[in-house]
Image 1 (cartoon, helix red, strand yellow):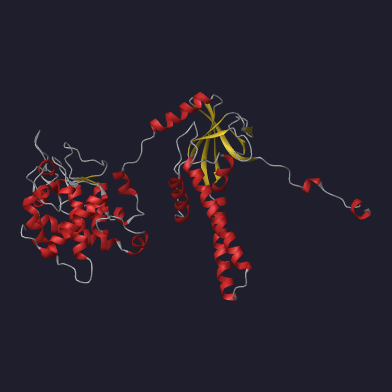
Image 2 (image 1 turned 120 degrees about the vertical axis):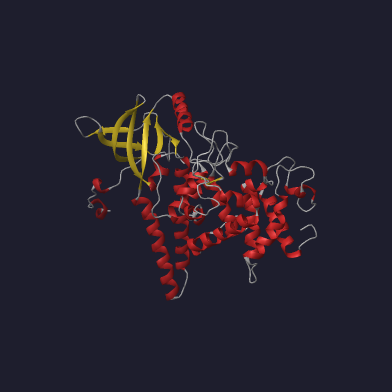
Length: 426
């Protein structure tokens, strides 16, 4: 007993209960509200902001999609050069700001933790990023725990070294979440009604990125990286809309940037149009460009409407009310629809793959046999509607085949079989 009484305890060495984090911040005004701008470690997001529950909708925010959140975590894991905008949050009065400059604009912002108690913080924009970081953190933690259990068993020395290397890699991934930061803007707004309006205002004023723009700038996918080179083909040069996703009757262009990427995927991956992650890493840009341009050569030679398109100079200014060849084609032919071109792209893929691929010249001859059947819209007497093999893939008065995935795949397979069997109507 005397031994214990003689021990000296330093209370300063003991950790005190902690329920907040402090960051360097800048205090400004926006819309009459105080705004604290700071940067926080990724790993802190699920601590200082409420963790969204995909099963329960926050009444002040939208429903969270767990899969979308998980994809952000995967993005962080796979892309060392990741980028993300600042998150927006609303504080009802729980944060403390201690200025350190005379103007009172720079100081320490203490944010109470959202875990383990009632939080004054609500996320306005960034719920999926918060959940995504949490899911990625949990993935790493679970993987480390699995390795520790495996290493606790009797394993060979060689196996132990491999497991230790895997563990160190996972620890480094967790450390990266702690070392890398993301922006956080905290709006001081005690009124819950005004806080709900803040979320609406942010959603109303945000302009989503169009698929056309995404296709031009997202260089992680080969179909997007090669878009600029493929668009230089005579059939497409000067006729690709870099901004729009939909081709209206008034649009003088032939297709959008997104459509070029869709067409590329059909040629490279087939009617399913999905290039696998493994293929993304192994296929070269040059191979993709060569294959797609070969397909464009084939269809612009085989089909009269597309051949006419290549003869037009898109740079020549038209007279008022005059239509471009692309507009004329879109108004009178199935070839004016990206859907029909995707079908032929899938057929081209099927015929060119395997150990005994069809020659481009033979495919041109085959496609020329289909050229007379390209008139649109679809009528009761149309070839595609009267043919029992393809009737289910077209609707009356339509300017394109039905774009459901199962219809596209079915139509591609039917036409591919025609090449092999050459039915009497060809």
